[in-house]
Length: 122
Image (cartoon, rainbow, N blue to C red):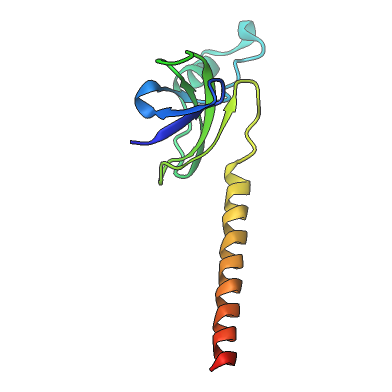
């Protein structure tokens, strides 16, 4: 079980209080009258299913009943951020990979400094 932070209630609650509603940020066709059947089909039925960072729409069904968005890593189930409707995510798949690479480089640099310091002491 994991806990989800509701950006409206301001509390971490058990996941049973929430329900996922699918992919977030799906744009409705701008001109419905001239939208083809294929375009409507894509809009209604096809969603991204990435391995990694994904933006999802959730509702706090047992609490405030408000919809909000979650950025979640689909492999580790880690919730990276929670934000209100109408807001844009600060974490995307592209900048998440860059952040992870930078963190990995920092860890390697720190580990080599520790080895160097241990070698100097000996």
